[in-house]
Amino acid sequence: MSIMVKVEEKLYQNRYIVDESRPHIQIRNADVCKSCDSQACTVCCPAACYSRNETGGVTLVTDGCLECGTCRVVCQDKGNIAWDYPRGGYGISYKFG
Amino acid sequence: MVEKFDAIVIGAGPSGNAATYTLAKQGLKVLQLERGEYPGAKNVQGGIMYSHELEKIIPDFRDDCPTERHIIEQRVWLLGDDSYVGTNYRSEGFNTDAPNRYTIIRANIDKWWAERIRKVGGLQICETTVTELIRDASGRVTGVRTDREGGEIHADVVIMADGVNALLAKRAGMQAEAAPENVALAVKEILFIDPELIQQRFGIKEEEGVVIEIMGKVTKGMVGTAFLYTNKESLTIGIGCLISDFKTGSCPPYRMLEDLKNHPVIKPLIEGAEMKEYAAHMIPEGGYKAVPQLYGDGWMVVGDAAHFNNAAHREGSNLAMASGRMAAETVIGLHQAGRPYSAANLAAYKKKLDDSFIMKDLKKYRELPGIMHGNKQFFGAYPDEITAAAHNWFTVDSVDKKSKEKEIMKSFIKRRSVMGLVGDAIKLVRAVR
Ligand SMILES: Cc1cc2nc3c(=O)[nH]c(=O)nc-3n(C[C@H](O)[C@H](O)[C@H](O)COP(=O)(O)OP(=O)(O)OC[C@H]3O[C@@H](n4cnc5c(N)ncnc54)[C@H](O)[C@@H]3O)c2cc1C
Ligand code: SF4
Ligand code: SF4
Image (cartoon, rainbow over all chains, first blue to last red; front, side):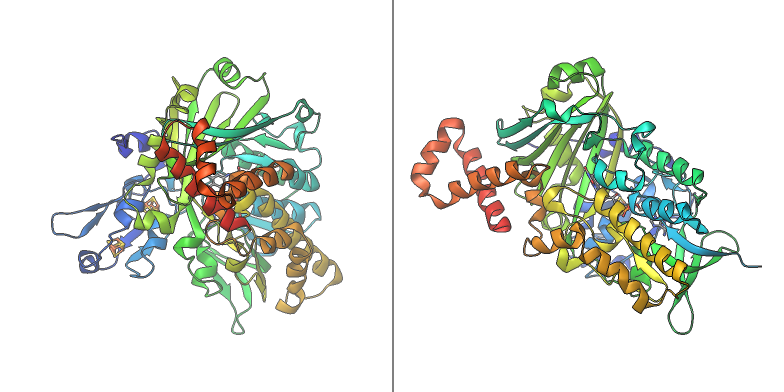
């Protein structure tokens, strides 16, 4: 009975301090994603930052990132995600948490 | 000139706050670094706050701590497709002058801590990400590097209170990346609503609170739990599962949360409320066996970064506060004795942990594998309730299935949900035996 849900609408409520053109997470090698069977990052990320693209690989857009660390944990066997925190003060800024 | 501190604490969550406050109160020169825009900006909690550990550090916390409601009723619900079976424990006895559990809005609590830390002379600096530990040739930690210009700061000892990601210890080779079966991912929302409606729907007075711990079909077979808590003017709803289960599953966390919100027994409770924030955070749930190295020359690790989380009892922030306090007390002891912060001397921290509820509880449940997460609700605040609940599920397991099924069928409408629930019960019993 899964209901269609737009995660963008949820993320829209959040406050972010964007560090323009300084993504704090990067995919190391796009080819590794193409041969990744599970592409688990696309399912696990709570902000839907990872999506399958038309080349069979995965595109990462960190704008809505909640800095949880889940993608780094799921991709540890492939080690294809370079994960860091944003610079101090940037990124998600929870009002309530 | 490079500035030098007695101690640096990395992170302004409950573990780092407890450590910083305790050190500053004893007159040590302590610097606390936090990467968030303000304290709490990066943090997520359900949240229930337990008084006991906080009271030990700040006995008069009730004077100004911005808690939400004290909890007078605990519900544990097992959800079917369109039903629930559950237990409630409510007592007028929880309406005391010094309640034991409160619902909280985490960002408010972290800001309050900052003020209390300032008052005892601790220095907290936000908007500063620590990028690396500084170590000398022998490997001893002598300070930290930050992302600020000229951001090297030195101290006699560094306490890592940087939470579940624990990037600094991982980078320094002090601990390994967490296995997906040892961490849960939780997502939650805060829903604002007229307090009158909260009081009506949950049958409570102003100041009184209800917490509902939830499991069952909503986690779609994954090991996980959900919750619904009452704040003053808002409700908090969330759900979390082991990352290993999300990884092999097909349901993204936000869809799971949306399904929970639309469940027929949950929906009427949150109807008309306005969503104001969506958050996600990991929870360390590997237990005793996942606890990393806790100290070394010039350093200690506390709280979630040390994997101190008792998933079986839904306790995290209290272990964080207790471990932060113990690390600080270890430092104070050595400082006063004029002894160095060598690994051999800091072993006293581990000893304190071993002698406390932290390690004793983690050890008790060490065989509870990743399944811990699924048992949390049954192991809420009241041990008697816990055993009674566990016994119920055990009975369902051990008596011959056909007669038990008949019994259960009476209280449930749909066969499928019954089987789902029985399956969950078996999982639980296996995990807590
Ligand atoms: C959804 C959810 C519900 C929960 N519910 C409960 C509950 O009801 N009751 C309970 O007791 N516990 C609960 N917990 C667990 C509890 O929140 C944690 O155990 C607790 O917050 C851990 O405290 P900590 O200080 O160790 O880490 P954190 O609270 O994570 O604090 C770490 C701090 O360090 C900062 N930091 C990290 N890295 C750096 C760096 N490199 N430089 C500078 N700063 C850094 C972070 O910004 C953060 O402020 C819940 C957790 C979640 C996710
Ligand atoms: S899990 Fe890692 S390797 Fe696989 S698609 Fe995602 S980022 Fe690429
Ligand atoms: S850290 Fe969390 S929110 Fe950010 S991209 Fe990774 S999984 Fe998504």
